[in-house]
Image 1 (cartoon, rainbow, N blue to C red):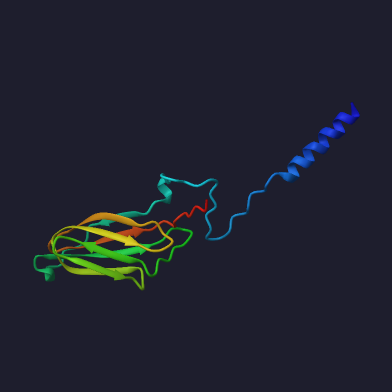
Image 2 (image 1 turned 180 degrees about the vertical axis):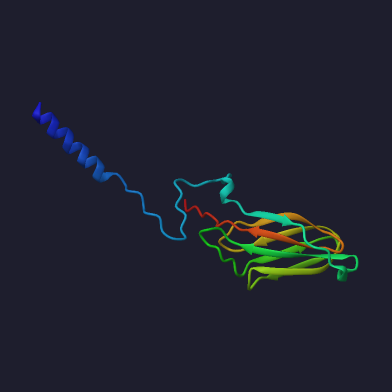
Amino acid sequence: MVVRVVVAVALLLFTQACVARPTPPQAGVLIVGGCPRDTLPASRRSSLLRLPGGRDSSFRGRGGILVHIRGDQANPSVRGAQVSLRGTDVSRDTVLSDSTLLLRPLPTGRYSLRVHRIGYLNLMDSVAIRAGYLDTVRVALATAIVCLD
Protein backbone atom coordinates (compact mmCIF):
# COMPACT_ATOMS: atom_id res chain seq x y z
CA MET A 1 0.00 0.00 0.00
CA VAL A 2 2.82 2.43 0.89
CA VAL A 3 4.56 1.59 -2.39
CA ARG A 4 1.42 2.47 -4.37
CA VAL A 5 1.12 5.85 -2.64
CA VAL A 6 4.80 6.66 -3.26
CA VAL A 7 4.47 5.66 -6.93
CA ALA A 8 1.28 7.77 -7.33
CA VAL A 9 2.92 10.85 -5.74
CA ALA A 10 6.04 10.42 -7.90
CA LEU A 11 3.91 10.07 -11.02
CA LEU A 12 1.90 13.17 -10.11
CA LEU A 13 5.05 15.26 -9.52
CA PHE A 14 6.60 14.03 -12.78
CA THR A 15 3.42 14.85 -14.74
CA GLN A 16 3.25 18.39 -13.32
CA ALA A 17 6.90 19.01 -14.19
CA CYS A 18 6.28 17.98 -17.83
CA VAL A 19 3.18 20.11 -18.40
CA ALA A 20 3.91 23.36 -20.24
CA ARG A 21 3.47 26.41 -18.09
CA PRO A 22 1.60 29.38 -19.60
CA THR A 23 3.76 32.30 -20.63
CA PRO A 24 3.17 35.35 -18.43
CA PRO A 25 1.55 38.28 -20.28
CA GLN A 26 3.85 41.01 -21.55
CA ALA A 27 2.99 44.66 -22.09
CA GLY A 28 1.62 45.27 -25.58
CA VAL A 29 1.50 41.57 -26.49
CA LEU A 30 -1.71 39.63 -26.95
CA ILE A 31 -1.39 35.94 -26.14
CA VAL A 32 -4.15 33.79 -27.57
CA GLY A 33 -4.62 30.07 -27.07
CA GLY A 34 -5.16 28.73 -30.57
CA CYS A 35 -5.57 30.86 -33.65
CA PRO A 36 -8.84 32.66 -34.40
CA ARG A 37 -9.57 32.06 -38.06
CA ASP A 38 -12.76 33.80 -39.10
CA THR A 39 -14.28 35.44 -36.07
CA LEU A 40 -12.99 37.81 -33.45
CA PRO A 41 -14.76 38.92 -30.29
CA ALA A 42 -16.36 42.36 -30.58
CA SER A 43 -13.66 43.81 -28.32
CA ARG A 44 -11.00 42.82 -30.89
CA ARG A 45 -12.51 44.59 -33.90
CA SER A 46 -11.85 48.05 -35.26
CA SER A 47 -14.76 50.46 -34.83
CA LEU A 48 -16.08 53.76 -36.11
CA LEU A 49 -18.26 56.29 -34.26
CA ARG A 50 -19.99 59.17 -36.08
CA LEU A 51 -20.66 62.37 -34.12
CA PRO A 52 -22.78 65.14 -35.68
CA GLY A 53 -20.95 68.44 -35.79
CA GLY A 54 -21.87 72.07 -35.86
CA ARG A 55 -23.04 74.15 -38.75
CA ASP A 56 -20.38 76.13 -40.65
CA SER A 57 -21.68 78.75 -43.09
CA SER A 58 -18.31 79.03 -44.84
CA PHE A 59 -18.82 75.66 -46.55
CA ARG A 60 -21.39 77.06 -49.04
CA GLY A 61 -23.16 73.83 -49.95
CA ARG A 62 -20.24 71.58 -49.10
CA GLY A 63 -19.26 69.77 -45.91
CA GLY A 64 -16.38 68.15 -44.12
CA ILE A 65 -15.29 65.55 -41.60
CA LEU A 66 -12.75 65.55 -38.82
CA VAL A 67 -11.25 62.08 -38.43
CA HIS A 68 -9.70 61.10 -35.06
CA ILE A 69 -7.80 57.80 -35.05
CA ARG A 70 -6.57 55.87 -32.03
CA GLY A 71 -5.46 52.34 -31.31
CA ASP A 72 -6.60 49.92 -28.65
CA GLN A 73 -5.31 49.63 -25.08
CA ALA A 74 -2.32 47.52 -26.12
CA ASN A 75 -1.10 50.10 -28.70
CA PRO A 76 -2.91 53.46 -28.36
CA SER A 77 -0.77 55.43 -30.84
CA VAL A 78 -1.55 54.92 -34.53
CA ARG A 79 0.88 57.32 -36.20
CA GLY A 80 1.33 56.57 -39.87
CA ALA A 81 -2.19 55.26 -40.47
CA GLN A 82 -3.37 55.57 -44.07
CA VAL A 83 -6.77 57.14 -44.66
CA SER A 84 -8.65 56.81 -47.96
CA LEU A 85 -11.89 58.61 -48.75
CA ARG A 86 -13.67 57.58 -51.94
CA GLY A 87 -16.79 59.03 -53.50
CA THR A 88 -18.21 59.52 -56.95
CA ASP A 89 -16.15 62.63 -57.70
CA VAL A 90 -13.57 62.68 -54.90
CA SER A 91 -10.68 60.40 -54.06
CA ARG A 92 -8.29 61.37 -51.27
CA ASP A 93 -5.46 59.35 -49.74
CA THR A 94 -3.19 60.55 -46.96
CA VAL A 95 -0.79 59.21 -44.36
CA LEU A 96 -1.23 60.65 -40.89
CA SER A 97 1.78 61.88 -38.96
CA ASP A 98 -0.61 62.59 -36.09
CA SER A 99 -3.93 61.05 -35.10
CA THR A 100 -6.26 63.76 -36.47
CA LEU A 101 -7.18 64.58 -40.06
CA LEU A 102 -9.45 67.36 -41.34
CA LEU A 103 -11.04 66.76 -44.75
CA ARG A 104 -12.91 69.78 -46.13
CA PRO A 105 -14.51 71.19 -48.22
CA LEU A 106 -16.08 68.10 -49.76
CA PRO A 107 -19.13 67.75 -51.99
CA THR A 108 -22.12 66.37 -50.12
CA GLY A 109 -22.93 62.68 -50.42
CA ARG A 110 -21.92 59.25 -49.20
CA TYR A 111 -18.26 58.23 -49.16
CA SER A 112 -16.31 55.08 -48.39
CA LEU A 113 -13.81 55.68 -45.58
CA ARG A 114 -10.92 53.22 -45.18
CA VAL A 115 -8.32 53.40 -42.41
CA HIS A 116 -5.44 50.95 -42.28
CA ARG A 117 -2.06 50.57 -40.64
CA ILE A 118 0.36 47.65 -40.50
CA GLY A 119 -0.15 45.79 -37.24
CA TYR A 120 -3.81 46.82 -36.89
CA LEU A 121 -7.11 45.51 -38.24
CA ASN A 122 -8.34 47.56 -41.22
CA LEU A 123 -11.56 49.52 -40.99
CA MET A 124 -13.85 50.32 -43.91
CA ASP A 125 -17.22 52.03 -43.49
CA SER A 126 -19.54 54.47 -45.16
CA VAL A 127 -19.74 58.10 -44.05
CA ALA A 128 -22.10 60.86 -45.16
CA ILE A 129 -20.93 64.42 -45.85
CA ARG A 130 -23.68 66.91 -45.00
CA ALA A 131 -23.95 70.33 -46.61
CA GLY A 132 -22.80 73.09 -44.24
CA TYR A 133 -21.63 70.76 -41.44
CA LEU A 134 -18.29 69.60 -40.07
CA ASP A 135 -18.95 66.16 -38.53
CA THR A 136 -16.51 64.10 -36.47
CA VAL A 137 -15.61 60.47 -37.08
CA ARG A 138 -13.77 58.59 -34.31
CA VAL A 139 -11.93 55.49 -35.43
CA ALA A 140 -10.51 52.89 -33.03
CA LEU A 141 -8.17 50.38 -34.68
CA ALA A 142 -7.67 47.04 -32.93
CA THR A 143 -4.25 45.42 -32.84
CA ALA A 144 -4.01 42.62 -35.39
CA ILE A 145 -3.55 39.06 -34.24
CA VAL A 146 -0.96 37.19 -36.26
CA CYS A 147 -1.12 33.40 -36.29
CA LEU A 148 2.08 31.53 -37.02
CA ASP A 149 1.05 28.03 -38.03
